[in-house]
Length: 125
Image (cartoon, rainbow, N blue to C red; front, side):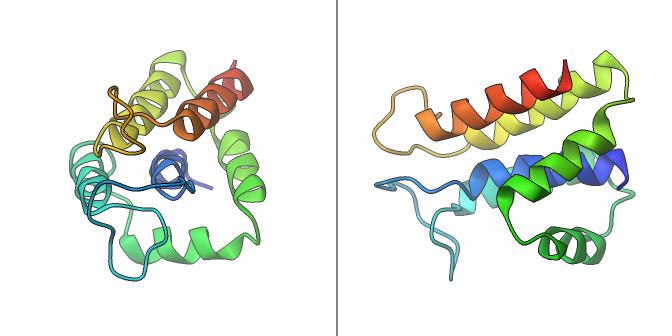
């Protein structure tokens, strides 16, 4: 997997985490991802990963049967990257997490999102 694709997939996976309550408008057909998170992913794509096609993103995302399997493949793709690139991955994930207010959490980052970002950070060390 291309590292830029892994960055996008991990960022989107933050948006797709389940939360008990959502306070922002969800994407049509989505159980947890908000419109604000989708807009933020588009911005990350345009700024950091314009070489990744959305078709490749969708095909690769769907190729995995679980979020755990998908995250593991992304971490493997990022293992050899520079610390600076790994920081960009984590910053992008946090940016998506911060995009919408969830669970009335004042920081906008839900506990599920923070836990997932921490897991990825530790896996990339």
